[in-house]
Image 1 (cartoon, rainbow, N blue to C red):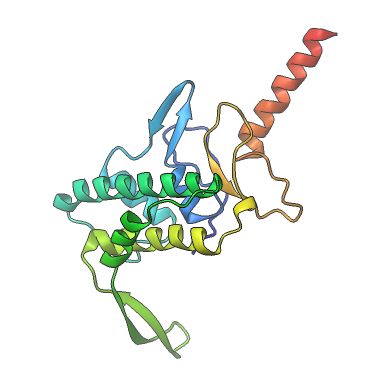
Image 2 (image 1 turned 60 degrees about the vertical axis):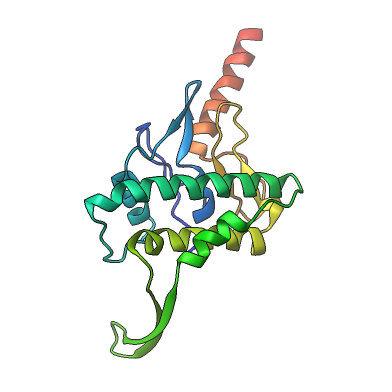
Length: 199
């Protein structure tokens, strides 16, 4: 659940999927465009679409009346996650109670079901309200990162104008950029312009 596809887009409104961990993609729903910090979650529909891209909706729907709640709760979870992850990276122990609040709300029960091959499998079915059901797996991913993740592999993009995070799953653990296609190439182009300008 924590690993996600890596893709980028030239559309500033498109939420980047470069974190290689659900918890870090959560942080990446805020990014910098030029000199401005931009919240890519402008509505509950944006949050729901982001959850869908992470395959976390699984047939769950959200009523129009719950969209505002989903947006507020998702932003709150993101703020707590950002604070905890930044503190963790700085060797500090943050207050986990706000995260635990989200985990407490996400209740599930084991169920036996038939899978696509006709075999019986045990799975967990969420029993909470729709918003808690949707955000529960994200809170779990944050908890998993903080408890099981390797601190040295949680990195911020090395480009000075980028604030995106990623989990470095490369073999050498020397990944520097959120995306080679965007920040890596921007850095190379800047270095080239510097070199050409001085010769």
